[in-house]
Amino acid sequence: MTQESGSGKLWGGRFSEEIADLALEFSESTAADAPMIAEDIWGSEAHSIMLAVCGIISEDDLRAILCGLESTRQQYEAGEFELDPQLEDVHMNVESHLRETSGPEAAGRLHTARSRNDQVVTDARMHLRARLLDVRAALADLQQVLLDLGTEHTETVMPGYTHTQHAQPISAGFWLSGHATSFQRDQERLAQTYERVNRCPLGACALGGTSFATDRALTARLLGFEGVLEHALDAVGARDFVLEALADLAIIAANLSKIAEEFVLFSTYEFRMIEIDDAYAAGSSIMPQKKNPGMAELTRARTGIVYGRLMQVLTMVKALPSGYNRDLQEDKPPLWEALTSVESCLRIAREMVGTAKLHTERMAELADGNFAAATELANFLVRERDLPFRDCHRIVGGLVGALAAENRLLTDYERLRELLAEAGQEVSVAELAEVVDPQACLRRQVSLGSTGPGQVTEMIEQLRKAVAASRQEIADAREASVQAREKTERIVQHVLEGGRLADLAL
Ligand code: ARG
Image (tube, rainbow, N blue to C red; front, side):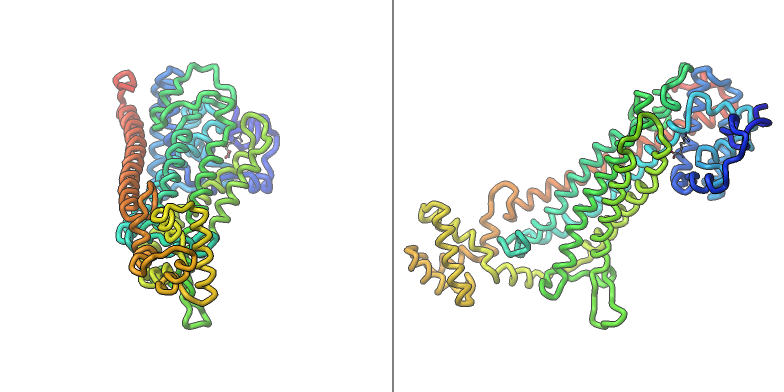
């Protein structure tokens, strides 16, 4: 009966005029909401079941509602449910469709004890939790490739850098597993974020809860949440879960940009340590000889997208008053974009790393060519001559200066022996050869977490276990969602077949 008064909108009772086209176009959120259609329908199923279980709506109304929602779902699954921008958002689209299929009486009861404010953030949390698992899976795939390649190269010497200057010889396996280690922290961050995302705000209603005796825990269970986001005012207004997810993604992007940068650098003619596979490189339209590291460059650049999306939402939520504010509608496009961007960068990085060739001879040549073993020579003097490290540092620094001035290397053993003797240290050429050989240097590294092959093998082993554990967590979390979905589905089918709620164990 309220249909006669007000504007044509479902919320239009107090309005005497339609919303202007310009205003509707400005404010509608169907594009941002489109990824959450399935979640919105599921949310309505769970909410209406809860309402009936609590005696707030009748089982007949529940049946009518579920019947309508079922048809919406089928249309959606057939790819035929398009969101109408005229209807403002996904919630109004689903409710309007329900009015057409189930009639205004039953459909009109669905929105009892809920609000779009708790609905939208429920949908967003549900969609985000699935996307976080996809990101975790893509991360695990990249880690796996890094570890597989790393395993083959625990004895492959390359220069390790600080300040982008030769520092000490490391193994390629050490370098690659270093990236896998950073990504492991990303896994852990995402796992922790997931726990906070996976709490149910539905039932908070507009901001202060409701006078109906609802069962929020039931709704949460049906939607596969790990629990309820209790405080109603907080539940509708809080977006720290979005910030947290974006911060995690920004850190992943930062970590990815480091690999990307190294692939750009190491694949140059100057470095020549890596050959990017043709399938993951790009050419030039004018210079026939060019092979450009396009995927690595774009990955590096897209870090900007992700940082930008984090800053966007941080700025958006700054100084918002408590409760829902329409500003919050703007959180989803940046969130979806950052997720999509990071996931695609992870996938391309995995392929780029997995198909790359390491030029191990060139790596060895570079490791040999620029005094990278100097620290080991100093360590040798400390060990064998019982000198203070600082003195040895000075002696070896002097030798390096003299050799460099003569355009010689540490591998010029005879000259090295002479210079050492001048500094008062008699060491045989045979001994020196053993001390400064990069391969031998590598094998001598034994401290925890060092580049020595034993340590690297050990760390790769641990990382493999961690990746397997991540995969298990991802599978378990996905399974929990599937279980909840199936539970809701079974209740829906039971009710649609005329069954009573009392016959179900909820
Ligand atoms: N489209 C809105 C959003 O994304 C849904 C919630 C609208 N609530 C409201 N009171 N207008 O945030």
